[in-house]
Length: 493
Picture (tube, rainbow, N blue to C red):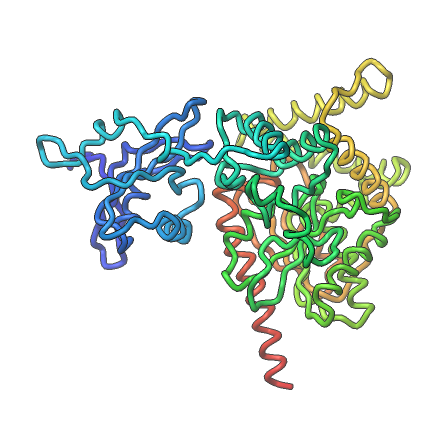
């Protein structure tokens, strides 16, 4: 026996399927990628004769995937890209495609990867460039180039395909407003992910749109019960876009974010007010139900209150999803006098847990405890006046103000038991202590029980690649079970 370096997998009939070389592993945006695995999937695409995938550095030193393909007839980039996305995570889909008549071969008759690596990519192939024409397009293009760290970005390039995320969206919209005085919501990126479509005249793009302040269509088409997800402390719902890519094609998904982000003059001082406003927009979109609602982090508490209010209206909530929200935090947000005894009692099991965590995951545990210490030190410094707040984009001040209001609303809110299930999507990786690791405290509130779905990653990374792939599958599984129950009930009636 000897190690060949080939990558393979054992099939159920005990035959070995070879899918490439194991030494073709690269790191793209923090993820380890097997180039052979991508090539194997491309080899099954009936549009292609052959394909090779390589990783190259762009002008900014950032690695990107390039697909060199020989088409059977005409190369259709969109079709091949969608084919890959259906079988692989998005980070494994090449950013650039180069169509070739034939792939170069070496003297042994094998594909000459070095020749492809050395080959320069024509600019028009690597990134078709459509220059900005209007003043607003020029301003926006400059901002995108600053935020993405790229030399040229055309007005037809897609925000998400460039690797955009919610933090970038905040920076872009804030800087555009500062330079032009015109406010755009980051949520518009779901419908208009290019500079050209984003800056199209309002009369053309929004005249037929509903006047929603908080409801954001993330994936608006499909014949299944829509899922409405309430934001976390980051407020924006852009981080649910990845999740929408991994639910069924027919599964609509909407996000709910604070109305203040659209400069709406709506006064909401309690968590019940916030839930009531979100319900009003859901009812405008879907008057009769039934309903599937979920909340991430802080949004979990809002979702519970929404379930309560909808039930009191006589509406049916088929699913109440909780995305890694710890019910016990509702108690710990109360005054120091109320929580002091329980906080003292929990120190012993907390220290035991931290000790075990140090042995199991020393790097993550030390990093988390260090960051927690720095955060508390910074807060203390601000309180005694020795630390000044750094200057940031205006949008961050707005987010901070809204977060403070919602934190106050949570302090005065008490979760009451409710007659429904909780579908708890819990991060497998826990870098901070909780009192109830199994149910995150929800078992004493959900009288019908808690259904737990473990999702890879921690509280933040569960919504990111590659963890979001499994998250999407488990979320759809829960939604399908709820809708199957509804179908059986209607059949019986």
